[in-house]
Length: 316
Image 1 (tube, rainbow, N blue to C red):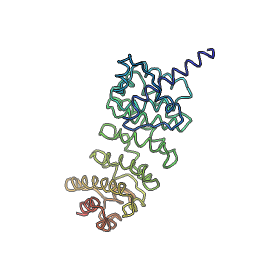
Image 2 (spheres, one colour):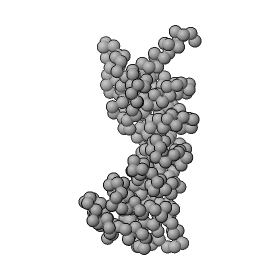
Image 3 (cartoon, rainbow, N blue to C red):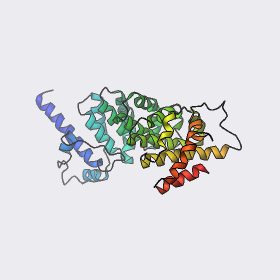
Image 4 (cartoon, rainbow, N blue to C red):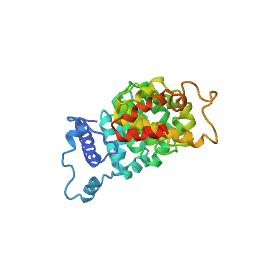
């Protein structure tokens, strides 16, 4: 390819990214933002549509993508182009729209994007996760994306604590666990999530708890949760100095467990020593002699009304 061909291809890429970034950037379910000075930031404000092109203008204002837009972006991802991060940002923002979610799936885009979860560059893996997060708001997409859950869990386990990779992975799992359909894929990872709670920052703690609260709302997941091993230091988070949103979600998680416990206590008593180990969630958070039971009364004097109300319910 001659020099003119290379320049023409680069201009076409920039134009495509600019049009599509403008279409979805302000509406993303999880908004993927390009840093100032990057390709997207430079081209998104360039007037690329002619005034006479009413159909293209309508598509841009509605956020809808044309099939050839998606095909070109996916081809760039598969070609190993240097613009991979920017392409993923564009696809992720456009995936805020249900039409685009379907279109990307129908054109085979889900496995192409998911294939970048093993890319050697952490920023590429993180942006692939962010794009998949928005795409996972679609039930049909989730049916295809469920096969990548083990890989996402591995990314959480192998990535540095509080990293963008962990946060993006947990966002995706939050969407995948909103319904009961795929929660069973996380049944062996409860201990991983609980361990993250005691070592991560507040942002990651909140995201972990979103997953745990989703799981604890499903009665079919309860035995897996209460039998999972929990770090002894988990109870230290039930403290007045814990970030308010983290504390409220922790109390909601335990409240869901207690609701299940109360419902089944008469019909099928739980908590026998043969069923739950000394380090299990049941022993640490639910048992009558658990340390949590001794710590909860101190939270009755918490300044937040909702905290006090949740604690009062747990103690009854």
